[in-house]
Image (cartoon, rainbow over all chains, first blue to last red; front, side, top):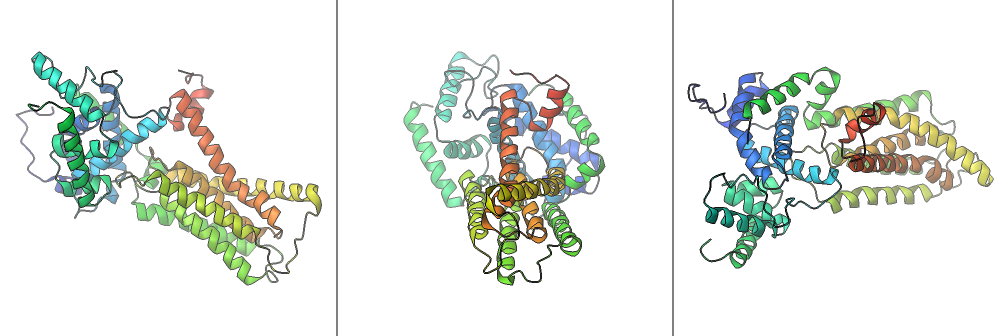
Length: 190
Length: 234
């Protein structure tokens, strides 16, 4: 079971696990799934309309990881590699479904199944999350991606630069502009 | 996220179903996939050159042949590089892919319009003759390009935004083969009979993708879904 406390925790790094998987260790795939399934779900869920769509993208991302495993260079890092696949799949998802702009289904920009808001959260926190989500949705696409990866994904700028295919300086500029814009949109205490 | 175990079971099932030649081909690394594609196209080109070459090959101006083959080859390599670009690389800007592919086709149009010196067109005087010859070459090109397209689809890992580049690459491979086979070097024949193969491959792909998007199904499932009646308009 994922997250089962009885199972010994695998101490290998992501890259070691990937190398083991390429070499034929099928258990390594399960460990990578347990590590990255929830992380990828949170990453893509902010951009999709439903949990089902997000699950499909997570599944396809990991299937692509399997198909492209011989492309993985062992001196590179797995996390940005997977994030790039996931974000490319989200863009392709919208292209294939009638070329609609990426946005949540709901008018106010807040999806009830938004994963950053847990059921039972106090109303004030929930409203704050709604405002934050709406503010993020109002950012230009390139700033939004950088902010989401930096703020929610805890990715350093160097890693984000690899994911979005831009220079570190360009990523810093996008982040700066995005955060500035968020500060203007959101009230002081948020 | 819900049922993580259920999701893993689905994924595990998908991975286990990845068997056979198609799975083997698309699981190769990107340089290997590119080599397989280029190697196959080169082998076809050599085969046509050795066994089905145009009868005027000896008298055809060498500079024009080199220029035409070089231009087709350059655009073909660009189309393959775009078409086989893996998803773990950041998506190339759409304008850049359009510029490279569109610019490549314009370049080919310009090269095809360039007369081959004093080398006369051997067929098709008058419009009916030009159209007849063009139609024959278009048919031959479509038949030659189809197996290349099938191979490129087999090498494709799915969910690529650059499928049109793959279709164009197949059409351009047909142009390469036609250049070595067809003795008619009249510019209008080259454009109508040869270059249209690449255009039509690209257009058919775009139209197919558009229909799949209207039905909201993955393009790989559109045909089978329409045939067995499971795919309906949303």
